[in-house]
Image 1: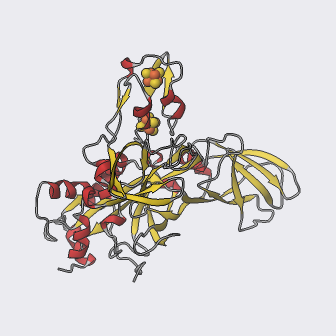
Image 2: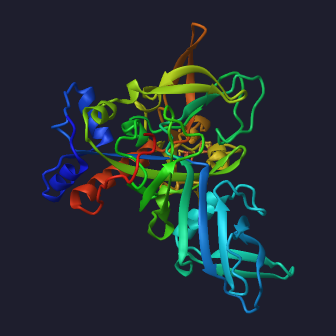
Length: 427
Ligand code: SF4
Ligand code: SF4
C-alpha cells in the first residue's frame, strides 16, 4: 500500500502518527510481532561512526592589528586549513576549508575531528597565519566569532560498512584499528550500526533523496546527494549542517594507529510510505550481512552479520575502578582512542562524555576495571569455520540509539519536520 508523505505529515500534525525508533521496530519483530504499514508511520534511524569524508567551511574576520592582502597558509590549533577559494583581498577575512582527515603539525594525535568538536564546545582556537608577503601572525577565534561554519560530508552514512581482520603475519598500522592491528586473525574490528543505520532502513532511497532534512551531529541539515564511491548496491550520502547548532557529544576525533580520524553522527526520519520501505525497516541485525575484509589486502574474505556485533553484546563498558591492580603500564589509558581514561589522585577515571563505546579498554585491562562482552565474528573461508573475537568497534551504537530516540521525540513534538525530497538520488 502506497502512502504519501503529505498524508503522513497530516497525521503528524494531528498527533495521530505512530513514530518508532528503528531499534523499537526491531525488538517487536524479534518478539514475533507482524508489523504492517498500518502500525507505523515514521521510523527514526541513526548512526555514529568514524566518517573520514568530512570537511568544514569556515569564514571569519581574523583578529589582528596588521592589514594583509591575502593569507597564504593557516593553521587552526596546528591543523592545516586550505585557504580560499575566495581570496578576500585586503578584507582581513579568512575563507577556509578544513579536511576531516587533517592532522596537527604539532601533535600527531590531534586532528580536524578534535578541532571541530572543540569549536562546537565553544573553546578558543589558536589561529596561525602566514600572509602572501611571508608575514606571520597569531590570533584566536571561537565559534561565536565565526559567522559561517558549516560541516559537509563527501561520503557519510554508508549502508553499514564492514569488519576487518589481519590475515598477514605482521602487525599493521591502519585507520581500521586504534592500535596496531595484530596479525594471524586474532581479533576483529568493525564499523556499522546495523539495524538502525539510516540507509539500511531505506536502501532503495525511496524516501531519502536530494533535499531530505536530517540531523548531522544533532544539527538540522540536508542531504545533497550520494557521496564518493557510492553505488545503488552500497549507497552513502553527502550533506551539510550548521556547526553552530551541533552537539559536541555526537562528533569528535578518534585516534587510530594511522593517525586521527573524524567522528560524525547522522539521524534520519523515514516515513513508511510503502511496503517496500517497511520490508527494509523490519530487517534486524541478524538479516544484515557484514562483509569481513582482510585489512592487509583490502579484500573480502568472508561474510558475517551485524548480530555478531550488536545482539546480546554490551553497548558500553562497565567500569569498576576498585578492581585496579596498578599495572606498570596502563594500556587502556595509553591506547583509548578518545583519551577518555586517566588517573586522578591514584584512582582511574572514565570520562563517559568522551567515551565512544568502542570496547577496546575491556580487551586490554587485566584487572577487570573495564569489562564488556563485545561478541565474536563468525564466518567461513573455503568451508572452514572461523570465530574471531571483536576487539574494537568503530561505530557507537549506544549513542546512535540515543540519537534515534531524540529524533523520535522531535518528530512527535513537531520540532523536526519530515519533508519531500527534491529529486531521487538513484532513479
Ligand atoms: S590496565 Fe586495568 S588494572 Fe591495570 S592499571 Fe590500567 S585500569 Fe588498572
Ligand atoms: S570504550 Fe574504553 S577505550 Fe573505547 S572510548 Fe570508551 S573508554 Fe576509551
